[in-house]
Amino acid sequence: MLQRARILVSSIVRSHNNYHYQTYTSLRLNNQLCRPTTIPMRFINTHTKNGSTKTHQSKSFASKALIFTATATTYYCATVLFTSASAADTSSNDQHTFKVEKKIDDSYGIEYVGFDTYPGIQHDDDTGVATAEVKAASAKVVLSALDNSGLNDIGIVKDKPMSGDGDDNTLHPKHAHRIGLGTCPVYGCPFLPLDVHYDETVKAQLKNLRSEDEPTKDDDKEWILNSSGSEVAAVLTLIGYKGGAIENQINQDRALALSPYMYYNVNGNNSNDDSKTTTTTKPVARLIGAFDGHARFGEKVSEYVVKHLPALLGNKIVEYEAKLSGDDVDQQKRDDDISRILHEVFLELDATSPAEPSGGCTASLVLQLGTKIYIANAGDSRSFIAVHVKSPSDSDENNKGEGTTKIVFGTREDKPHLPTERERVEHMGGQVYLPDGFALTGKGTTRVLYKDPNTGSTSGLAMSRSIGDWDAGEVGCIPDPLIDILDIDEIKKKVLESLNAEKKEVEIDAASGESIPSSKGQVYTEKDVKIFAVSATDGLIDYLPAHSIANHVATGLYVQKTPLLACEDLIYAAAQGWQEDKQGRYRDDIAISVTDLEIE
Image 1 (cartoon, rainbow, N blue to C red):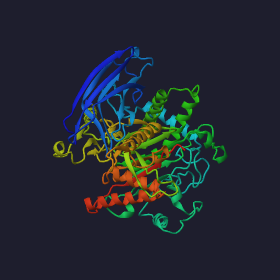
Image 2 (tube, rainbow, N blue to C red; image 1 turned 90 degrees about the horizontal axis):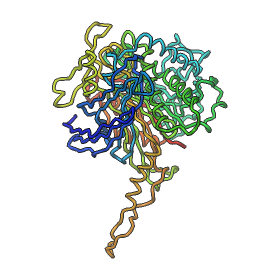
Image 3 (cartoon, one colour; image 1 turned 90 degrees about the vertical axis):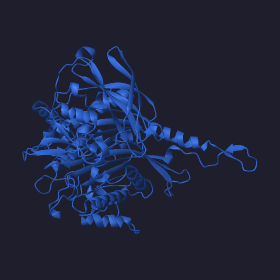
Image 4 (tube, rainbow, N blue to C red; image 1 turned 180 degrees about the vertical axis):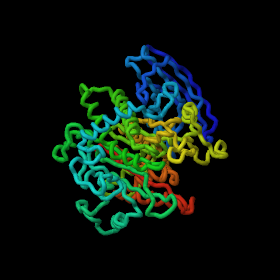
C-alpha cells in the first residue's frame, strides 16, 4: 500500500538539445525510509506506438505520483518525468524522448537503469490501438521475420507435418511448436510448458525424476519432459478451474524458455543443420517469458505471442547487429537500441495479434545478451532476477545446499490504480474501477472498464497494459512495456564486494583482548555467485511470496540440478493457496519459466 511520499526535484537543466535531470527522492514505505538517492537521467528517442507524426512543443512535467517496485529484497524510488521535443529540438524528426532512470538495488547496491517506453499522455493520440496502416506494416514485418526463421505464417517450421487442423498449440501434443512435430526452428528448441497434474504421462515422468533410481535417459524420445526443461532451464504449467466440467477448461497461460537462444541463426541460416550453429563463436543468449491470456480468446493471443516472439525479436537483433560498424559500439547506445527493438516487438505483436473479437495477454520476458539482461514487462505477470550465493567450501561436485538467495530486481505489476496508469486511462475517456475500501486497505482488484464486444456489457480488465485487448485499448490499455537493464558483471562485482567486506571484519582474541583478522572462512569468488531469472503469471505470484519462489528455484537449479521439480513444487503450492482461498470454486491458470544466466 502506498504511504504518503515526499518528492523533491532539485534541478532541471536544459543543455543544447537535451534535458538533464538530477532528482532526489525520499519515500516512506511501510514505515521504512528509502535511501536518499541521486538519480541521473538520460533519454531514448522513440516513435509513438501508432505511427503518428504529431509535433509538440518541448515540455516536461513531474507527476505527483510515485512509481515504485518492491519485492522481498529490492525496491527503487523515482519521480515520473517525461520530456518531449519538437522536430527542431532533436536530430531525428518525429521522435519523442522518454526518461531513463538510474536505480539501485537495496540488497547489494547494484546499479541498473530502467524506463517506461510509453512517452506520456502529452505525446499520445488518445488511443491504445494501432491504426490500420500500422497493423498492415507490422504484419509485413512479422511475416518477414517468420520467413527468415524458416517458419510458415502460423509459426511452424516450413514443410513439416502437423497434427490436427494445423492450429497446433504449445501445450502438447509433444509440443508441435518444437516446431513441426520434432523439428526445432533455427533459433533453437524452446522449452514449453507441460501440465503437471492433468497430463498423466507428465505426472509419471515427474515422479520418476524424483525417484532414487536413474531416470529415463535424455535421448529417450518418449521422455516428454525433455521438451520442458533441462538442468539449467524449465517451463511448466497447470490449467485453472473457472467452473463447469474439467474437460471444458482452457489453459490461457503460455510460457517459454530458450536456453540457449540462437537468434544469430535467423535471417541467413534457415537450415536445421546443427553444424551451422557455431555457438562457440556466438554470444551467450537466453530468452524466457510468461504470457497470461485473458478474455474470451486470450489463449489465442498468448499462443500467437509465444510462436512469433522469438523469430521477430531475433530477426530484429540480427538486422541491427549487421549494421554495426565494429566492436567498439558504445554500450549505452547498444542498450538503447536493444530497448527500442524490444519496444517495437511488443507494439508489432500487439498490432498483429488475433485479438478480435476479444482477447489479450500479458507479456513479461527476460532477454540475456552476453553480460546484459533486458527485462520487458506489460501486464501483471512478473519477472525476477535473483542471486544465489553458495558457500565457498561447497564445490560444484559436492554442493550441500548452503547459501543464500536474494532477489535483486522485480518487475512492476501494471495495475489501473497506479497514479500514472489511471491518469492515462481517464485522459483517454476510460474509467478505473476501485473496490470498496481499496483506498484504505489496498485490497481487491482494480480494473479498466470497457465495453465487451461480445456481450455489449461493461467488462473490467485487471491490468493497464497488455498485448491485444483492443477494446480496452480504446480507453487507455497499452502494450508499451517497462524496460530495465542489468549487467551481470556489475551484479557479481557488487555481490562479491559486499560478501568479502564481511570477511575483513576483525575478531577479539579471548585471551589477549587484541583485535585479530576474522576467521569466518574462505573468500568468495565469481564461481560462488549464481544469477538466474524467473518469469511467472499471476496464478503463481498471487499466492507465493517472491522470496519463496526465488529460494526454491535456486535449490532446483544449483542443488538438485532439476529445476523442473522446483517448478512443479511451486505450482502445487500456489494451487493449494487457491484451494484454501476459493474453496475449489476458482483457480487461475498457472505458468512459470526459469533459467540460469551464467556466461560460461
